[in-house]
Length: 309
Image (tube, rainbow, N blue to C red; front, side, top):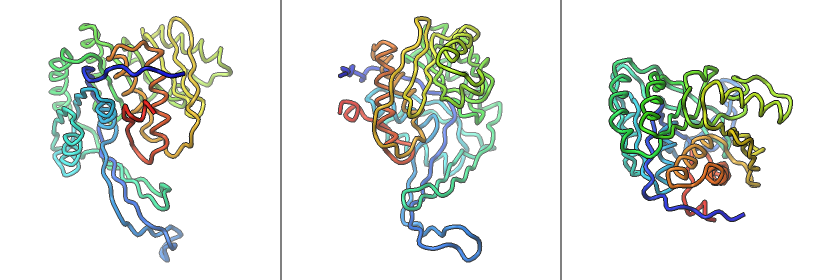
């Protein structure tokens, strides 16, 4: 079925959440180390990309919409690199600096197009910086069409309840990419977009589709959500609303790397809703965008041109 793409140029999306710098070291593996039974990677090139909420913002910009990003970074080289990358992607980024914080970095070592190792550098932001971010959120939320709260469990969304209430009071839809087993903190949001493992952590293991629908309906009622969009990898995605469940099968293509696919899904959903699409239409386009990015290595984006194709 062909889907008409809306004009996204005037869609304004505010993203708040945990940002990180994704670093990639690409190299050749030709021998095993004499020191331990591990491959030796001769690094030939390196790459840096915005990750986490910054990748969500990058996906919004790639779809032609106006992305504003609010987050916390360390006063370090990785934070400066993130700021530079975001500026290059035409994202209006307000990155609060915390001298006690190390900017989250995920370093992936790739050999023969396979990820061999990931090393994470991270710690927790201080309360003072997060409080300042809440004040700026209240000012910026008035000038957006829709809000994404991208929770990676790194402490950047300590005041998420206040953010949801503030945005909803102004009539803004709030989309959340959730983390952890405490979904009570997302009460009052419009839509949450868990994957299968994340949802199972909260509602328990379901036996069949009817059982799943009943569990999601209870969750929606408890939290006052308009919808739950469940992403299901090779099974596609299912949208649960008061009208029932709508399923969209996965786009049949070779899956190369699923990292960052959830960022693309929530970014596309938000842009399309802000541009006037209905929720089922926005979900179909988000599903297609996910089909594009899983065919790419690492955190990636899907452009309007790729969606059209």
